Length: 162
Image (tube, rainbow, N blue to C red; front, side):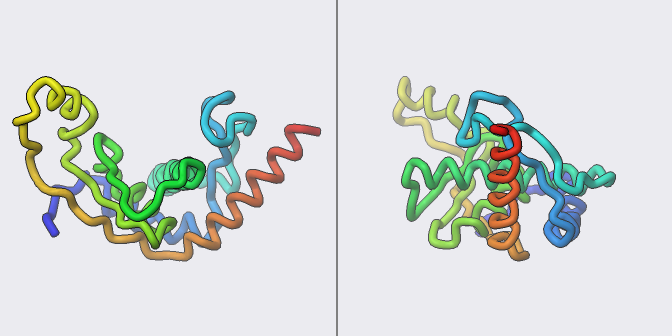
């Protein structure tokens, strides 16, 4: 495995995750009504934390839960490559790896994203910098958190429909 430099806040965000999981602090979808797998949802917090790192960790878990749902909807299996800026969001990619234990999740250098792929259409000889890195799943009971989140999403949907 190749070590990449960490974002300065990564250690604090990872330390906040157990508190977010343990206190069921979560964001309900959707941030943009009319889009995504929960297009009719209404944004909201469950047990909104006061701590900035806990809020950001909860946001990363939210993004991983929505991505996990979208990946299920398209039948994603086996391997997953996360690139661009999301590849640098360690809580997000590690949560995604934990939510999808049967999927090998990899990250690529954030600068080898979609725009680099477009350049390769013009010059197939361009080589990406760096190698793919296998993501280590996040510690913690994300299955329980996901089940609680889905129950809260459904309860919110029912309240909104009423």
